[in-house]
Length: 91
Image (cartoon, rainbow, N blue to C red; front, side):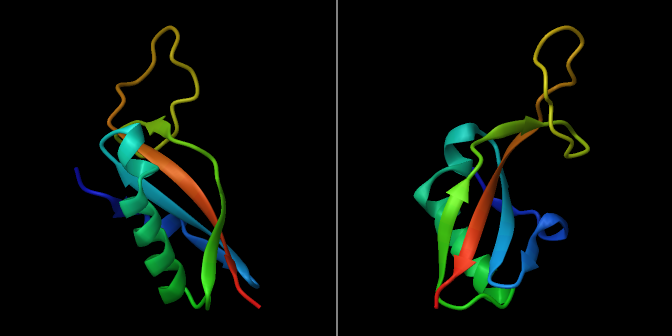
């Protein structure tokens, strides 16, 4: 069960940022290991003394990385799960 940071979707604005994590199941993208990866990535994005200020929770994505919003009807196959973490730099 590998954790992967989606570099192309990570953003920063001033002292805040968003880091997107992808993995095989909802548990792994919210795990302590995922959080460690998020903090490491945030540091490489230029945020110092960074902490996690929030997370959206795990959500399923299709083969193209697009969020699967509805599980009813003709939903695409769930390929991975993602979690969006909000990070903030310390003072």
